[in-house]
Length: 112
Image (cartoon, rainbow, N blue to C red):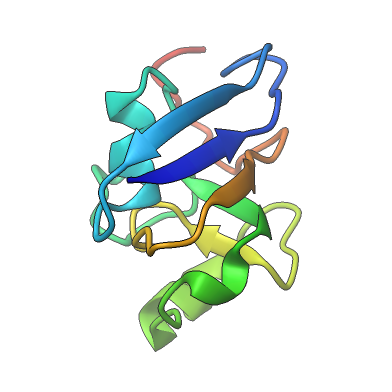
């Protein structure tokens, strides 16, 4: 099992979280299963940027992003070189430290 260490996020996980995930699971699915309610407005179909995360440690253990994911990431708020869409990034064998950006560009969030 791989550990996903989510850094504190003011609204989603104020204390941070540590989740165990099977390799091959997406970061988004692992987060949701572990009680971290990361936004995923397109229902994880790689059609928006609401599940954007920044992988602070372990980024190189992830498979490369697709061109489709890269095109969407270009529209994400707070894009960084280690940004990924959590619905597309699959956990490998290396532990990850993940930051959920403070904002998304989702104007129709169900929770607001």
